[in-house]
Amino acid sequence: MDHHDTTTESADIVVIGAGLSGIGAAKYLTDDFPDKKVLLLEGRDAVGGTWDLFKYPGIRSDDSVHTYGYEFKPWLHKEAIADGAFIRDYMVEAVTEFGLDKILRLRHRVTAADWSSEDARWTLRVTATDEAGNETDKTIRAGFVFSGTGYYDYEGGYEPRFEGREDFRGDILHPQHWPEDYDYSGKRVVIIGSGATAVTMLPAMLMGEGAAAHVTMLQRTPSYVASIPRVDELAQRLMKLFGVKRGYAATRFKNFWSDHLIVSLLCRFPNFGRNLLRKWTAKELPAGFDVDTHFAPPYNPWDQRLCATPDGEFFTAIREGNADVVTDQIDRFTENGILLNSGKTLEADIIVTATGLVMQMLGGIQPTVDGAPVKMSDTVLYRGSLISGVPNWAMMLGYTKATWTLRIRNVSRLAAEVIRTMDTKGYDIAVPVAPEGMPTTDLLDITAGYVQRAKDELPRQGTSLPWQMHTTFVRDNRLFKGQLIHEDIHFSKRSVEAPHLVEAAS
Image (cartoon, rainbow, N blue to C red; front, side, top):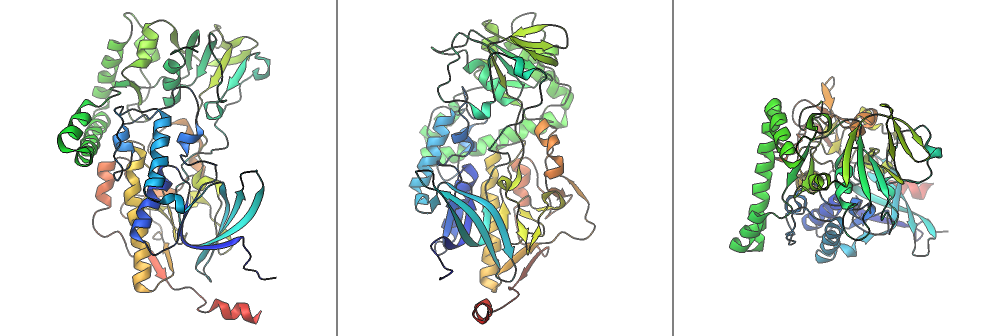
């Protein structure tokens, strides 16, 4: 039997993941290399990543989509803070508009990636599922891999073990697995958590026809919550004045800098930041509200991401009296609610565990290099993008203190530069090698629970270029000025010049 059966395919570049990062990278790389075969693989049956996965009430961006969107595709909705469905539509449009539907393979889940220096190729093992749900195992061989797989596990969110969970008579739901068309009208809801998801869901579940009767946000530790305008009036004016393309570019520029200045100010003068945020919050809450118990976190602003609420809708829900915030620890679940450490019981028909994500690198793929498994926590990232000891592979990691996606262009530029260097100099392999004894530090500088839980699985970064990344766009962007290729990237030709002879001989 001919071993080149139908289930083996070759590509020059494979992009894994058709979410925001993967679609962006595929657009840049197909523009950079019109003659190369590029494939965009997506494990799920639709593009959109996070924005197609999450269906919970109120799902929306936490940042202005003018900045979160692509520089090459203006965001035309009036709302700068936008509903998840609009963001997903925008990505679907980008795929067709730039011809990426021709290289897109849906329901192609990469399960393994093995590098051979002898062939200078990655062998990706892929499970392909057809419309009817039948699975086929495929092999895709690739010269270069770009992973845009996000940073968390799509299969399941994080749920701590709650005593008495099985005693509770109502439904327990995690936002990551929200059932389609779930009816919570007239119900009493307790949302456990105080992050962006909880802050989004609380007002959303009280709106419109199928509203809940009452929603309580139960938090162990408060978060900073800031009100931001849903519609960016200045962006609207800039687009009217300069036209869509230039107005959009100007809006992005304005946003990079205003975000950067606010973050820098709050980080450099944390006490000033705390007081300012406290003053803003107090102004939004009913008179006599206990701001210090419920909205004064023990950590400094930006040690964790700030939660945004468009037009203050979160605070409005509290002022209107159908929502409240409880700061306490959980003793156990009971049959009709939650018993708190303080002895108080919160009655509930529905409990939502907005308790966070499980971080996961490379979409759970465990790459091997010449047979040796890569342990991500032993690796260091070159400019936060290339993995030490792993040839011909770039990964997308975004920002913690700026819009995640602002990094796509630079990471794609670096990948393109590596590929171009190999092409022009006749090399097949490019592997970043960290200098002996180089000091390293944590990759992400936030203290959020999901980051702390994943510390042992995350790669590290160095303390100076080119092994460093910054967590705001303005500072990190400077690291991508000038020469991107450094002597710590080792280029070589593949070890056996004529592998076809070896095959024939065997």
